[in-house]
Length: 139
Image (cartoon, rainbow, N blue to C red; front, side, top):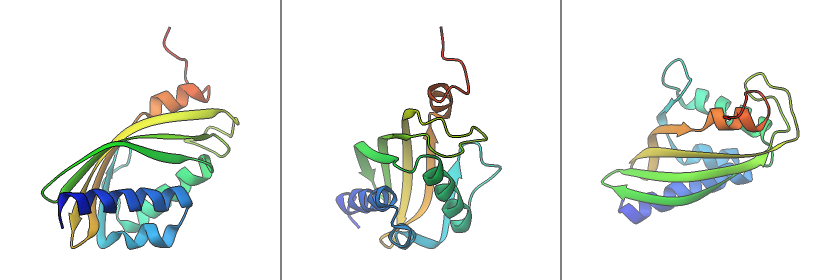
């Protein structure tokens, strides 16, 4: 696939999350998909990723990711994104607050045969915890 094809695949994958179209999201990944997530005890397989996404969508049911920039080189596409939503479900043990949140992040996805095979993500959990009142904001 070309770099543009890889970027478009990544946008379709994120679009499936935004629509909560879990079958389309899963169809964008290979059967042996692996995710490397901050805070996870180790790499997540496809089932672990699906569970993570479900918990995230429950915490922020109106959460929507907007890709602000992406680049592709070889079989890897990188994106910088912002998620906006409302904290209307449990998030890392914090009960719903109804507060709006903005979370920024970056990810890298490795593409194999037109599907995402491996994914690395970093996002601003501390900023979200501050926005929902679970941690003090910096002075």
